[in-house]
Image (cartoon, rainbow, N blue to C red):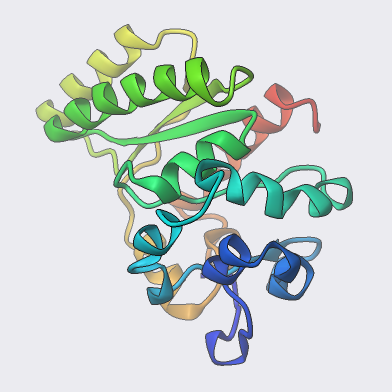
Length: 208
């Protein structure tokens, strides 16, 4: 959804983790000025099995990203929903974590599991890891959505990044056009919600 032609990608996240020297060549320009991307694709399937044979496997991503950090104001790592070795690498490489939570019942169970993993990573591998915010997504004005959102707000009163991202057809359309929502339709409900959320995060991170 950022305008990167995958057919022209020569190195991916998998290459970055297995071969940290590929960091520079793995970067690709996007449709957004000043934003570069390292692509994750199907080659990540089976990566964790390969990593099991490596020493320092939990720190591979952190070591690979280190030479890139001076060139960027911020690095965002998008992880798979499972809490496997790839996600652990992301937590070890990070200063803070943003937790997207769909306002649906089963999301609460996943949130509790993630909280336990964060505590373990902080205690054993990355003491600086913090939680920068909880993002409420795919929100709709139903009773269940309102109840789940209320429970999350009660559990993390100081971490919620408002507003909740409303369920919106324009958000679903944007990836099919290969561009983010702020280029596809910034005036849509989803576009406005994400812009408001980004403004909050800019202030929180000292970028505004």
